[in-house]
Image (cartoon, rainbow, N blue to C red):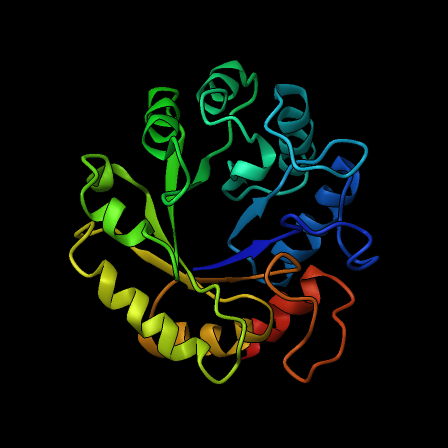
Length: 235
């Protein structure tokens, strides 16, 4: 499975190619799915470009994207979108339009309560396990681990040379944590393409998009998410 991550916490200051508004997100999703993306991951943003879990912001992004694609659409629940751990479950409870799934970063405070709130509303969970954090150990002890949709193994090592080894270490730490659950392995910035290649070699789900990298494999700036998806599919 190849997922597109449309924008992440990036803004137009990072690249003019990063989609921000609901309309831009919808257009980016449509083009990426046409290029081969099988799922969409998005960070809904306020008009000023901040990630948000507010119901109106989430609903606007989801409705716009779903109007043009017929694939699962997931959203972030990262702490930067709502810094107060106690408010994140309340935000989920207030959503008027639900995503198909949401990523929960297991190393962040309040992850268990947030995951429980999502499951209560029928939203599937991508368990975000970041390298270099206690996420893998916390997730291995979680009673919710068997209930997640998939494990999102996120390699934060941005060095192209060491990122694949970091990815292997992360996968080893996750071994047995959620038996039967698929793993989506991806990297970031300089590690994005090496880790994507490793995911292909290991037969794992993966993702690519302007959240993970602004560059094509040959280091040219990507024009859009669709160009990244085409490059990933070719590799």
